Image 1 (cartoon, chains in turn purple, orange):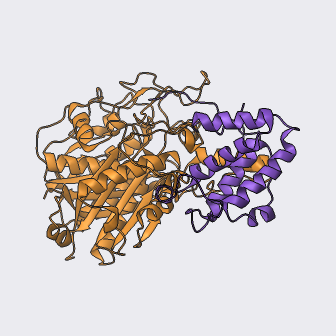
Image 2: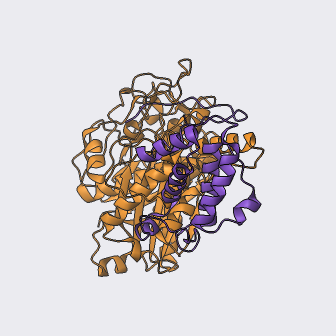
Image 3: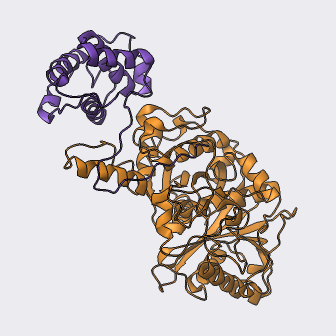
Length: 134
Length: 420
């Protein structure tokens, strides 16, 4: 049994963050590093699709093709509910230090729209911040 | 009443074992689950001993860091809204279902209900609030509420298992899961439900346990072998534990028709409140005495027919003394001398989980034919005069058992279980 206990921060302080991609496959973490180093948007796609996969309910994941088509609807085709979509958005916000508004979130219904949105949003701020994941 | 209830399935995730066979072996051998287990890394905190659950890692506020035994398939969509004690509860639930010969598909016809008990997760709530305050409540875990508030067990388990009968939670501190079990029996007796699943669970971390330290309710004894010693004159407080216990009770004729094997019959229950103090027991155990009598009356049993009492006995100076007075009033004064033991001496105190856990122990004792002892008892408190408190486990098959629980505000709940 693991005995590591981290001390709790006071309620008003910033919560501790671990690397959000720590449990993801190496190729995903490599792609994340590639994007941060060289603005490789194909690498960014790999990360975004892996995040979508990771948040998918197990049963729906088993029934979804390995390569997610751009036309797949997140709610409807891929088994997401609105809370899981919020989880994805917060995950991406934390990973890339961006802020995604509720209105922007409402405009994203498919995998393709999510990929395109993250490309434009993240690329715009990439150079102005350091990776919280490295 | 014509409808009676059998316990047909049990799941255990406890400090003394993560399945019925291990729990039974621990109880019979007098093997405790305590360890030197500091809950925060501040060496000035006086509480050194706790009774941790083995095989799990749930000490992080992020479910992505958690691990549990591989034999349980816990899907992401369920995991994301659980508290640490919800992971215990899920695993105990899976065990209980398999033990009862049931599957998830048996639970969705409206005849099965779910009553749960936990304190919620102060740990998850703490982290959720820290994150929410930091982001001016713009951002945070969308599952922060349902994973942390009291009720998190029933929200999650009802959704995961598709339970469409009566679903709710019970909050009476250390009597919570005893209330859940008592009211579950009523649901079956009243014909509202045919099957009830009762869940008690708690987590063991600084946020859940250490707030009991300023109340002076926790043992500061650094020795795991003696920190929890119910009824002993040297006891100095309780030792905390976490885990989950799930009990499946079914209307007897339906259980028999489907060929279920029963541990025991749940034959009655009673409750009464002290109406005395917000946090300490009535000095004479007035409410507990009344609750025991009500449970006996409900079960149509006399004190002399009770072979064993699983006492609430948390190892606190005030609580154990009050319970000893109540036991003497109900049993000794009536010329009855059932075996009395406090199994929290081995498990530690599981708070909301305690009543369901100990009902599970009573069911094991009835099915297997033994009575747990008080292995840490050396010098019984003088209030225990006349009580039958053996040290060793007895190889005696009990027929009728009384299970006591008491919670804050003086809530007292007792169950009577009978051999089948």
